[in-house]
Image (cartoon, rainbow, N blue to C red; front, side, top):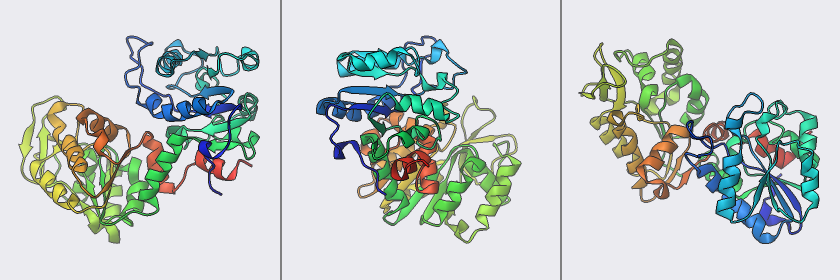
Length: 396
């Protein structure tokens, strides 16, 4: 069954419960200050649409962080404040997701916008507790999931709640945008199709690497993930990050018939420590006293050549230790290359590569920057997510 989305149903005058992903970074020094509002901003089209068509009540819910019970520093108060500013309308934050006063709020004509306090203040949320899911469902006539970033979690607000909304569980506008973009990778990639993988651990991405290798024309590997592959080929990588398990996994991948599609760095930017001065290494081997921390200029030239005629590109993970500006040039160069591809569909998924694109100011020149790190990878691995399947097929 296909998902029904909010613009396919008449929701005027209805009470609607929407799961968003407002899990934004909060300033450690000031718990009222949001460092990056992107996830809230991405939800605004859905919120504005529901306001515009005249829903009776909009009940918004989300988690924030990983609290162990109610903790003030994880309150959604700064989210409520920011939403009220952006929407120019009062947003009431409840004391908890199960606050007895919620039912009273629902009988009043104002306020129209209600934000439930952090769902994870209730341990029942992550346990997908049926009683908690039933309480959430009792607030509304329709349920909407617009939280792509948590759609891979089998929690009460993303999964269990759906069973109480037969034919009344819908997808939001952000969820649709994410699915449409990822399906261009999963279902109908145009060739040449190239993937770029970076980040730290092979073990974290083994499944996606194996899956994607059968689909792509080439797989470029950089960042700390490259060193286990180089070591698996008998190439010395100095003091670079190389877990034994990752080397073993890399060896297995290289031995696959599709392993020949993998292209690894041929030179490096290294140092004697994470905070040390950058030292160019113009050979594939890294000296014994150095750590590989970025890809080198010859590797970038090779990668650029591979990208030149691509029609589909997936990028996940940085090309080096980009938190330190000395080792960020490879990552930013990839962002620049993707932004300059004239005929390609480019998708960036995963936390650090998304941060790099944003820092580079090139976000508008990438076809799609996914809001869900783990969720976007899992969607590519599995072709769907549990929260999306719940909307399609229901929960039994």
